[in-house]
Image (cartoon, helix red, strand yellow):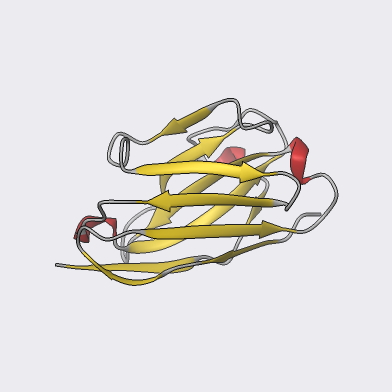
Length: 124
């Protein structure tokens, strides 16, 4: 069992930056691929970024490519999402997720554990 706790969300002006963190419990964190997803009110949950177990592979949604960076520190059981050049359309609840399959995926169904989410609001 893995528990995930996100932090770092908040209110920021367009063009600003935030860094989200996702702290994981358990000794097997380093074997999991991790992903970030987001969900705006009334909309489905969408893929944002993924990273494999070692950090050697990352993948991004087109909408955030070049602005967001996913990274991980396996010594701290933490995955990060650095978000730069934020836009109002980035406003959503952001969720991290863990995939026991090691590789990462764009599909929410591939992930085994989810955090509770952290709200990001970007004002224009």
